[in-house]
Image (cartoon, rainbow, N blue to C red; front, side, top):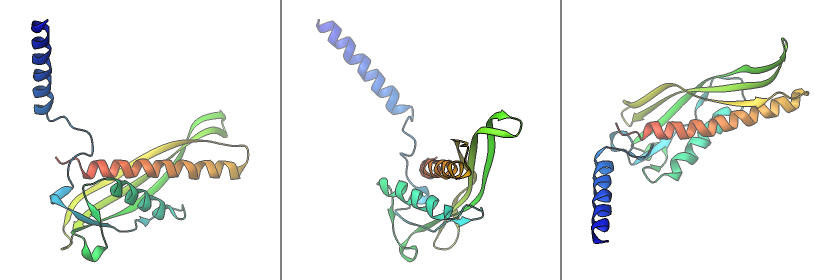
Length: 172
C-alpha cells in the first residue's frame, strides 16, 4: 500500500513539473503590452452603415477589460496608453439557400483595426483585420430578418471583445 502511494506521489510530482515547465497557460492570462497598468479606450470609429455599432463594440470591449484584474480603465489624460480602433466593415453573405434568389440563413462578419498607443503617440501594439462572424436566420418579413442581423452583430461584437482582450494579453 505504501508503495502505491509513493508511486502516485511521484506521478503527481512529475506531472506538476511537466505542466509548470512547459509554458502552458490559459489564453488572456498574460499581462498587457509594455507593462501597462492604466489604459483608456476611445470610442471606435465606425466606417460601416450600421448605426451605433461603434458604441456597441466599444462598450463590449470596456466590459471585457473591466472584468480582468490586469489593467485599470481611466480617462485618457490619466492613462499610460489608449486603445483605439476602426470598425472597417460589416459583410453579409448567404450560408444556405431556399432557391437561387432566396437565402434561409446568412452570416454577418464584423472586422476591426486596432492600435494601442502610449502617451507619446507611439504605437505599442496593433492588430488589423480582427474579425468575428455570426449566423442568423432569414425570416419571411424584412423586420424580423433585420432584428436577427442586429442580434448576430451584437453576438459577434461580444466575441470580438474577448478576442481583442486575449490578443492584448498574450504576453509573447
